[in-house]
Image (cartoon, rainbow, N blue to C red; front, side, top):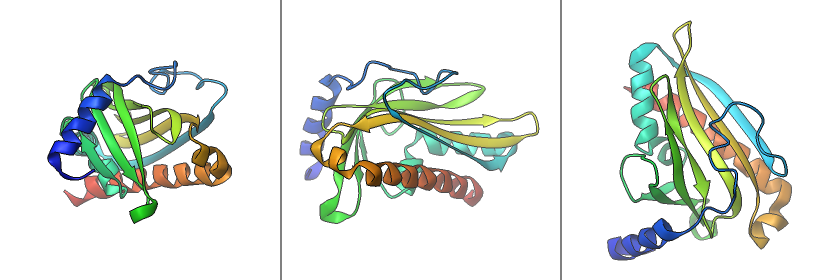
Length: 184
């Protein structure tokens, strides 16, 4: 994708695309994730108190967590809102893949964050949520929760390697947000 014109055209296409799975919003609901997918849950304390919650929320809703995890993010809005689409570039250089997503829900005010779902062209089909919350003890916790299964031939061939890569990226999200909260 070269230049803003091509990026704009691509985002316009993505805005019309359908999600690739029917269980929309499942990562933000309490209870088990849908059957038939691989499941992921990562959680870490990233700060303490209301100020850290506010910093975490700002970073999370400004795509800084994905960028801090090493992804290139081309969003239709600089701020996460319902129905915003983004093209995420995952992986190193010429081996990288585009992973288009749509924000399906935004949480607040006690639990803050969002979930995005996969669009056609994403290597997997499913959903991932990113939520920060303030505990009774003042701890700010960041939870990444996802369900997915391979959607492309490359992802199907990758199998266990793809699942390991997804866990690695989730761990990078946690480290990214912790670093962003502590840096301010």
